[in-house]
Image 1 (cartoon, rainbow, N blue to C red):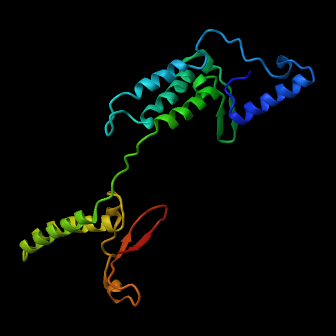
Image 2 (cartoon, rainbow, N blue to C red):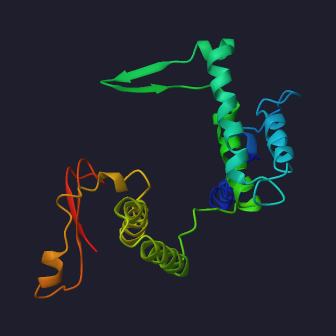
Amino acid sequence: MPCGLGSPSLREVEKILEKGSVLGYTPVSLVVPAGPFMLRDDQLMSVASTMMLRLLDTGKNKPCVQYNTVRPMRSAVPNQWRLSSLDGQTALVMMRGTTKLITSTCPTNGKWYERFMLGFHKRVGHVSQPDLAILIEVVVALMARFERLWILADGDGPSQEKVLFPALFAILTYARCLLGEETPLMDLHATHYKDGINHPKHAHHVVMTLRGRFKTRSASISSL
């Protein structure tokens, strides 16, 4: 019986054998015999077991490392296979324009390993640790601190500038959901509040202008 079939395919093969037996066909004449296989690790199951052992290492945020940390071990084997092994050196390259396709004989690119990785992922899962957003309470507390520093520096222009610019950087970065390197793209000369104060529909906002390429656009004007 062929091995590695999914449930629908397996059921169809069983039907073939069942109906074929009615006509007097033997299983060997209907399906390709599975094996006999050589007593060796042709599918690189040794690498699969190594990945499972790697999963037990201590993680940064969890007791064990996550699936995405272990997964690169699979791609490392074909790279080494292609660059160092004799089989990898004889791989065929198909070109069409600027597109290049390379045939691989590495077992970790095969069907068995593909199904192993699917089952591996479903069983071990993974926990994502995205960057957490800053809480509004933290921003309010930060602005209150800047306000106190501003009052203490009353009448001292250089000292107030030292308070003003980091406060402006923090509030604009937070309000517009910018990355740290995107905020310096702001054009201070074009950023103003007059139109926002007098706007007939959207009052009490600040027009913020960003220069250069920003989020796939060559220029952008944002309002706060």
